Image (cartoon, rainbow, N blue to C red):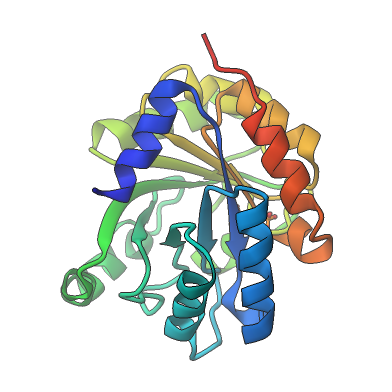
Length: 249
Ligand code: 1GP
């Protein structure tokens, strides 16, 4: 069974999901095992692995270690086409639809297409939208794109609508890792009102309350990286908040 079905089935039921983002450069082998155990205990739904920069040579080892330590699906969230490991469960095949950099819309996909196909990974076409997080983030710098202004809800909505009509299967709204300001609930709500594919929201979420409010606004998957690196007890707090979020009627 494809992992993508778990996103759509959970959305259909109104069940919200929590994904922990692991930056392969920031974890040690022992740290990965410990983190996987904590994620499993907190009932984390997905582990996202990746970052704008991946300096480590040990991506495969990182995935294998995660797979050996827990049953949580490992989803690659690559900052570049080199971040592919065939040991993962799926790959978010990102097109940066918020920007106008052709390399990130299609160019890098062409260059890496044969390698990605050869990996045998489940590929999930994802419309990636960078939203202004109040200060330049690594993703806005590295992607060489202008993020969507944080108060332009209609631009975000139309971008996501266009992405869905082009056939993309997920929308990922990201204020960027470590964003000063996370995405507003009004923007999430506006996007959710017009888009039926699952919506992933991340960037600068630091507490359970914001995660809960984002779910209420229409996010289907909440991603947290930075805050958890600083305070590991947040894994359980945020997981519980996300899983307690009400089903949207
Ligand atoms: C970044 O959405 C993710 O791409 C998570 O961001 O590290 O700020 O939680 P944080």
